Length: 324
Image (cartoon, rainbow, N blue to C red; front, side, top):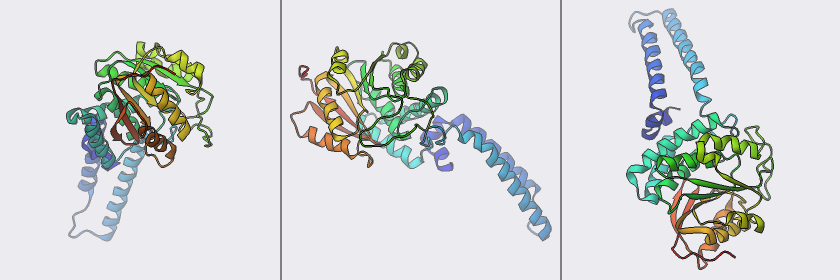
């Protein structure tokens, strides 16, 4: 835990909690040192007694630390929310490179990290993905300044990421309008992969999504939810009534599924719009990068901006193709 708490970004994000821990540790160490016998003239019995007392103090500290760790460990969500200083600093560096906003990168990462912890504490279910991948997406989208505030999320799980993205956009002074496409089939679906029961124990359904979107206030409550698959022509017709400033591609992770979503995104993303490829470069999902590389070899509107954690970022050109 100490590398995390001593990193610059995390200290800013968790300063009140970290200060309390530091004060308690200092108080207990001073008490232990003050009760210890002097180095000269001390008997082995006295030394053993001092060692036992110090061990007892350390045990008490660990016991008191455990409830705090429940905010950050993987219990009930599968993934720990306790990144190392190395991972934090790498994400900040990558974010600054992709967005061109060096000053805003660290601030946004700190805000997004706090938001992630708060949303999973208050919501039902969880946000899918690793901590820095989630934080990177929440930070990057507002900093990339999309051309409009219409956002499409392909694959939402519990709706908690969409609610968090709404809040981050609002922090940037935007007025986000979110549309979600997801099968809401009771469990997370991926072709060729057995996902099993979710670590949170919560069914993946519309009720859970609505509960979490409500945490984002009026904009969350106004979110459009279209149940179904993004490859379904009827689903596409229903949500292709506008051009989107932001499209999050986080549905079918197979090469064929990602290829289909990228082809659709070409038709409905606004000029200058941002497309986010989730799990980009993740060794568990090689089909995502495979589909990306094949798509980028075509006559595409997209320019690759770069990668933050396991998400890739594309920006669309000003030429909008008509819907198929």
